[in-house]
Length: 310
Image 1: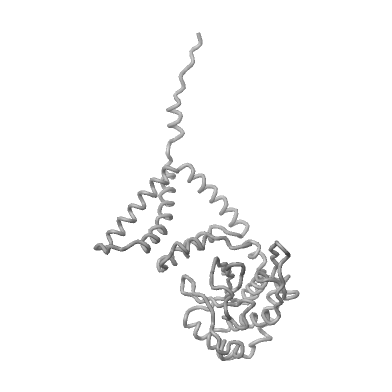
Image 2: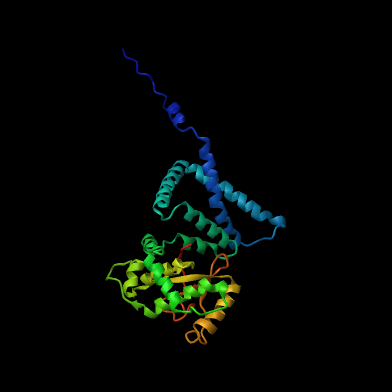
């Protein structure tokens, strides 16, 4: 008679469920990363009872840590799998030059910075999570290192505002405005093929100075960056347009004087400058193809996403 040994399924299960110490470390770090922005949202949107030493906020944060930790531990296996998958995606993104580890750090840091003063920090998180349309294609199309783009930008600086003296601190800004003047004075708006987004490279748009809003933005951003400026692209409803970093409010006063009294006197006569202030208090000025001078009127005030080219 053959004896069949009873298999100890419970023991096997326990051996496979042995928790590794690094599991708890990863879960705790993830807990903190989640808890901080959630706490800021709750802190700024809940009534403050003004307890001594802000004890109410301390209790709130500790309660959040405990609750999030319980949830994360309960979903440990799924979360660890997702983390590994996410890390692989970031490694791939870093390798091919798209969204990688540096981008994640910058976005998280930007969210933390902005949320500390913004009364509706949840809007910032939503804006960061929204995808920038055709981001990879646009980044690749901004060929600011291409000699043709560099040469065009240099030509523009030789053609416009070359003889402006006395503003050495703003020489790069003035030269970027020369690029703006050259592009916008020649730009011809042409729509994309029907039912398809066509992303033209900067050198392609340089041939005929024609295309739609994203083509204009790509050429403007590439040309500005090629001579030392810092551009960014703004995504709004059905539109993309470029902006240039001006600096602080003090810089804005100087640039305002330059635009209205030296560089674009007729175009900006009795007009306002239009710009955005980012989470660090930096001024970004509108360079849209619809503007006759830097800081011309926006087509839309709403910002759904921003792509900065540092």
